[in-house]
Image (cartoon, rainbow, N blue to C red; front, side, top):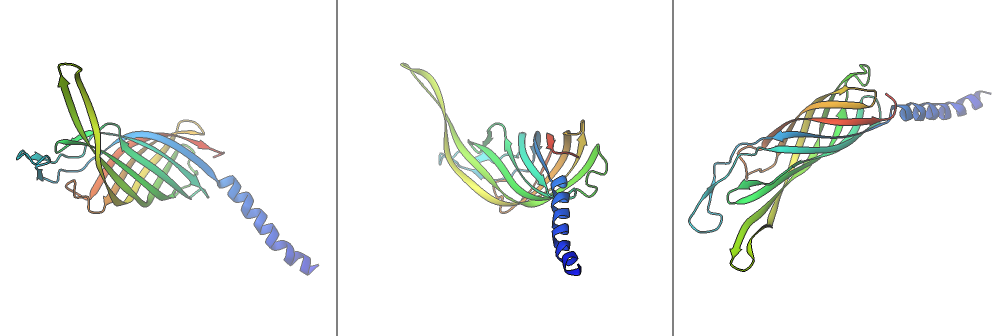
Length: 210
């Protein structure tokens, strides 16, 4: 009898843990908008070798955000997101577009104890991709005027990502999340600081029971 009880303990514990995790696991998807900011590096660049110098710009503009996360327990999970500038911006005679991407660990200190308001913190690693384009316009007497925007090159950087936000549930599944992101971008020489803050908000959907 004792051997049977001992043998049943691991099985019971495994069933209990699997049931608990199954109820705790949740998938969230979201998209949103915000703005990422950085100062100018203050450089003057003779981009085309013509003797005309261009001053590097600040980073501003509207950013889109798309992401998803998976909560293993009510408090801990993992996720990933991508932030991208909607349109190209001018950079020293060229155009550029930044894309930030990161993979994070997620901590919800109160889980879903408070059904409507859920604080959330993230931290992880990722990268930044800056693509540069050459905009040109052409006019002639035969075809009229046309324009082109040719990809020139890209620059990649490692980043450390941190964020803090609050999920505000409008329903049991639909939430709005104001969020502040802080990114430390390694050797971000194209701009004036390695720190790139972003302020925004996302709309998301939680799959599974809360």
